[in-house]
Length: 468
Ligand code: UDP
Image (cartoon, rainbow, N blue to C red; front, side, top):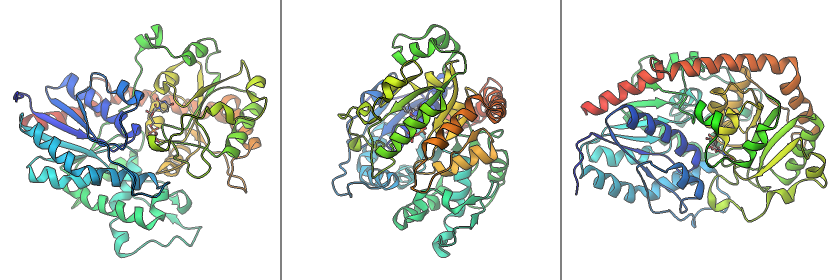
C-alpha cells in the first residue's frame, strides 16, 4: 500500500446531508491551506443520492456499507436513526480507520455530536479524537449540563418552567429539543454528552459575534471540558465569480431570480429533511398568497406523521410529485409571483442571489449560517431536532428573525403566515432585522477572512495535527 508522507486526518459525519455539508467546508479549508491528507468516512442507511455524489465530487471520501433500518420502528426519531446507524457501522468504521492508519500517521479522528461511540476504536488505535459540533454553541452548552440529568431527571410537567443554559437566553421547556422529552433519546444523548470529555478538542461551527456570551462561557476552563475551537461560519459561501457569471449547472430557479426585483423574494425551504402535513401545506400556500409577496418555495410531498419525513432517503417518497398536494388553483393564481421547486434547490446559491429578501426556514443550523453569510433575515419555522432552540436564539438573542404563532390546531394558520411574511418583507420590523443581519454578515466575513478569528482557530488545529 502506498504510504502517505502527509499527516492524515479522518473525519466522520453522522448520516444526513446537513451533517456532511459543514464537514466538507472544514475539509476544504484543511486541504487547501494546510498540508494534511484528509479522508471523510460516511456511515449511511442507503446508497448515496445524486446530491450527495455531487457534493462529494473532488473530496477524498469513503461510503461505509449502508446499515439496514429494518429492526427499527417505521417512523423513528432522527436522533435514534442516527445513533442506530453509527452503532451498527462500528465494525466498518474500525476497518476504515485501520486501513487508513496502515498508509500513514493518522493524527486526528474527528466525529460529530452523534459519533462519540467510535472513540473506543480511535483510542485503541492511539489516534487523538475530536468532536466537530455542527450546530449552536447553545446546544453544546446545554449538553455539557446534561449528564447531571441522569441523577436528577428534569420534570417536564410544569409548562411555565424556563431552562437556564449557561451563557444563553432562558429556554422555555416547550422549545427544548424534542429528543430531550423522549426517554430513549434522552438516554442516548446523555451517553454522547458523557463522552465529550474524551475529546482532545471540540470544533464549534459558530463564532463569537453570533453567540458571544455562550462562547465566552464555553471557553472558561473547567474540569472535564475539552478546549473549544469556534471556527464558524463553515458554510457554503458562494463566491462573487459564481454570483456574477453563474456556473455551468445553473438551476432554472436562479434564472427566475435574475428576473425579480432586488430583495423582493422570500425563499421558503425546510432543509434536507423537513416535511409538513398536507393541511399545513395548504395553510402555507394560502398564507404566501395572502402576503402578496414574491416567493421561491422548495416543496416536498406531505408527511402527516413525521416532520423530519425526508431526513433519511428511506422515508423520502420522491415518486410523489409534491406539486400535486397544493390547494386547487394555487399554481395558476400565483404564476409570475411565485416559483415552486420540487424537493431540492441549490440553497447556498439562492440565498446569495440579490433578489432574495427573506428566508422562511426550518432553522437547521447550516441554513441559518448560510443566511447569515448573505445577510438575509429569517422567519423561523422549527420542525425537529434542536430547531426550536435555534428559533429562540434567532429571534430573542441574535434578533434577526420573526416567529409565527402556532394556532389552536397545532397549525400555523394562513392569516398569521400572511401577516408575518409581509412584516418581514415590507414592514419596519423587517427593516430592523435586515439591518441587524447585515451586521452579522460583516462579522462573519471578517472572522473567516485571512486574519479572522475562525481562520486562526483552524490554523491552530492544523498545526497541532501536523505535529501529531
Ligand atoms: N439544502 C439545499 N437545498 C435544499 C435543501 C437543503 O441545498 O433544497 C442544503 C442547505 O443549503 C443546507 C443543508 O442542505 O446546507 C441543510 O442543512 P440544515 O442544517 O439547514 O438542515 P437539515 O437538513 O440538516 O435539517
